[in-house]
Figure 1 (cartoon, rainbow, N blue to C red):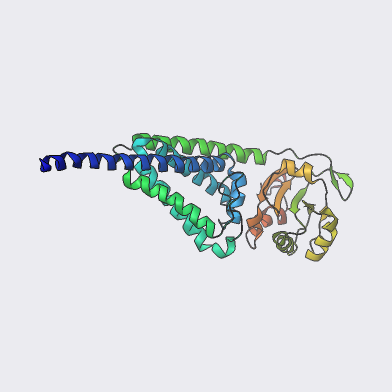
Figure 2: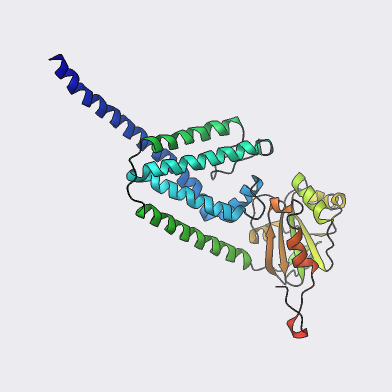
Length: 321
């Protein structure tokens, strides 16, 4: 009789354990899926803005927007897997890999990033510090639970199709955003040194800066070392315009000042200064985020765009653009 009771209670215990694991997997997957959905959607929808944030987090200059689009696509794909019960094991594996990557990246650059906003989520501000590793460690735990106890993956066709679809949509949005940034209509007139000015002709570099920003100070000093020839530099202070003349004098940058910051920043949105826009006859040729002003990053592009004179095919010379 005792043996019968023991045998009947064993399956019940195993069933209870399996039910508890399924519940843990479901809760962990949904929580982590929501996090990746918000974070990934933010990156994919605005890769250029988030790209600036990533470059400030030590992503190589110029690769931030592409990195934001790629990471955002992977995060959205992970969210899809975590929200779909039969794919939660794969979602847990991919989510855990992403969390390990984020933790490793911040740990490697910790001395440079400590105290800065990690830029992971919209609205929510998370400064890099000990708390960052605790919160991301909890997210990693969610991923590991889904990976360990999620149902075995049998088919990859649907996940593969989902990944391709997300990649195509993210790529299309990236291309559209890049086109929009190129096809900006330069406002007219723009007040430069207090006078209405037409910046739709010739070669112009718009240099947005904050006079109290150390990065802006270094960027301005770097720009002052280049020979600009026939390029006009328009310096636009984003804050404290009363210090504009002192800033340019101290950094030795020969530039004219425009206080039309609202008008210009509305056409060329960015996260934090310094930020530069290279214009030729009012057309955007290149833009430079904060990380791209670290020497020697922008030097090559600036030389190509500004230090070479425009060639005209009708006189037998090649075009630069």
